[in-house]
Length: 169
Image (cartoon, rainbow, N blue to C red; front, side):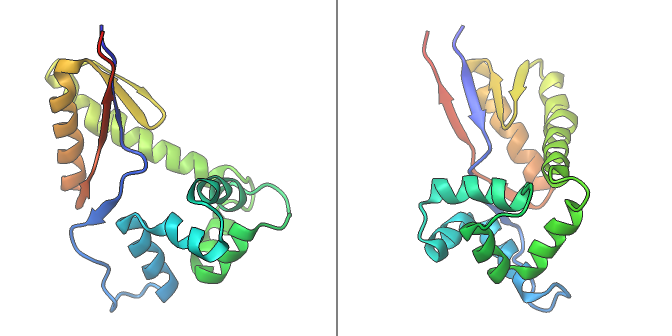
């Protein structure tokens, strides 16, 4: 049986409406949101730090989102300078446990897939297996899988680009 994999990581999402400059969020939060939603966040940090994008992505995870201990980090320094409000929020969330934010994001991602996307597929008798940020399905079910993800994200006010890969038998 061929394996077909759908990944929804590393794909830019865009809001159905752009961030409003009249909102009560600090300017750095609005900029952070805009960069993330356009898929330009890691590129921006890469430009500022001089590090390549894959290194920035890894260091952002380790040195910002789940930093354990006190040590110097080029990526964290650049992030804190550009997005001080967001950095403070991350630090507050992680103040008791450096993995709190990561676990919260993983639970959110899992609930989105397991509680919202998967039931739509099961109703169509499309079995799936999820592994972190990927979904495996039968080849014949790929279109239904893409439609379910697209529909859920549209209902949440986002557009979504998905990456589909497969192996032939």
